[in-house]
Image (cartoon, rainbow, N blue to C red):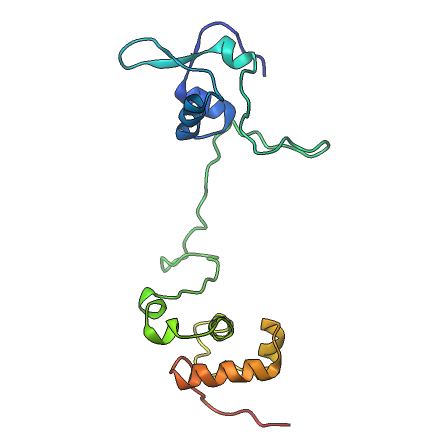
Length: 177
């Protein structure tokens, strides 16, 4: 990309050129990592194109330089973010699944009193809920232990605490083998 060393570069063009935010540029100016701008009038500030072209920048646009042989995307072009679209009924198409933990739950005395294994088990059970299988989520102590990387006995104790505190209810017991 050939640029002229004459003239001035305004903030918007500078942001597109080096791919950092306005606040980052001003922070670098105050830290001395970036050339100081020139005040052209009361409301117009710009940088000398020669200062920018000379490479008086200690860091430009990336935390690390690109590795040799890897393609580097053109960061100067604005990317258009496209939505996933909606179906005929107005619902979003292809949304990512997520697990919602409301604040009232996270701030409740029962949740605060849970140990990390018990919280992790609750999240493991909750993420198996797909919107239609309430009361039919099958998860045994062995499978829970594997998923959480804990012993099955520890998973069983965590199940007991979640049942006791009302986070889980047993719909039906599975036959033991």
